Image (cartoon, rainbow, N blue to C red):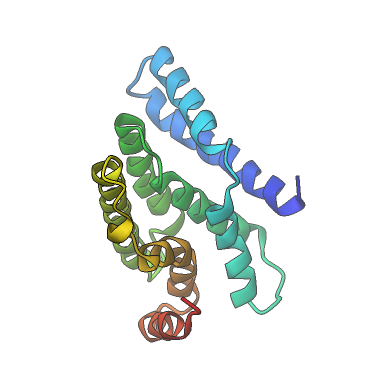
Length: 185
């Protein structure tokens, strides 16, 4: 496991503890145990590509400057929120999506781009749900015409869009337009 991945997983453990602490107030021990197992099962088994790309992209946008521990926690938190958007099981997905807002509030509430982050996550959650719907309704048809490279493009470039919002809160719109226009896709 690389140092970057280890740091990313370390932040996951902190976020998981935060979530379980929040849930402990309202749920039974059995329900909290279920959430802990669900988080580990759904989140730690994958490659973490999208979440780790948030850290890589942020580092690139910082032009090689050393990331502070606060930046690592914030960017990793966003990375985990990115990982959580793609969950399939309805109830588990709802729980995860609700905690995206909790994490964003905890780590970004005072930032000038907080509302922009919330809106972007809502937009991508909708796009993800729409993509899942297309997958489900076209599974039997074998009709690939409903799929497009643009949809793949949206899901793999949105970590960069988030980081552009963070690093350039006053000009991110034009920067994102630039990234979108000159992207290889």
